[in-house]
Image 1: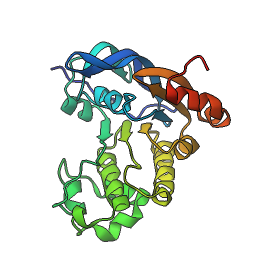
Image 2: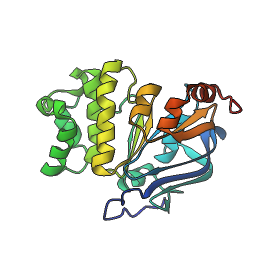
Image 3: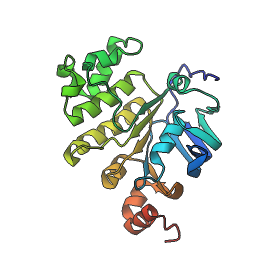
Image 4: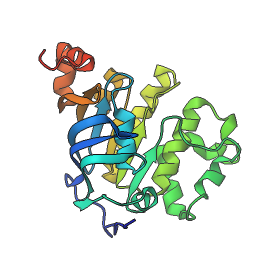
Length: 249
């Protein structure tokens, strides 16, 4: 496995962080995503949407190296990720918050932050500035947190790594819409304040499009629509047709 040297300075505003070209990926040599091309720039939130089974999670797992790429390419800040292990991709600046959050119920909030290299005080303070609700909960075990607090912890653990690319899979899963309405603006703020490139897989279409800059819509593994969040919000018929895979609508 090769490694990727991480740039010593953050990406410039608007610089392309993630570039996917003609990607096909899946399991047991069966493609789940076919011919996908997409990009994400520094400071941009891109929503990846579609019905269950559309290939959204597979796309994120291909980016982080957990799923085999059958054809096409994925580049991070212009460097190919072919042959790069998931661990090396994380070191290169990719942080992946998986569906189900990926936290350890038996560990406290503060213990989660010490799993990897110990973060600096400034780094912790920045994370708590995004998630102040976690500050008084540092000694509480993750299994005793509410669903919203657990999702905050999962994102906070990703931010501790100071990623250039943040992958968020089903952030709203199992959460009440009112909780999601509080979390998604935080994601927007992370992109704006840190110039982090964000790929957001989200089932709540309206809420996702409110914080995203652009969106790509998958149906049955194929890209059926893409465009600015504003134009997709304004064209409900196109959005519905894309979810159904009716590309000619």
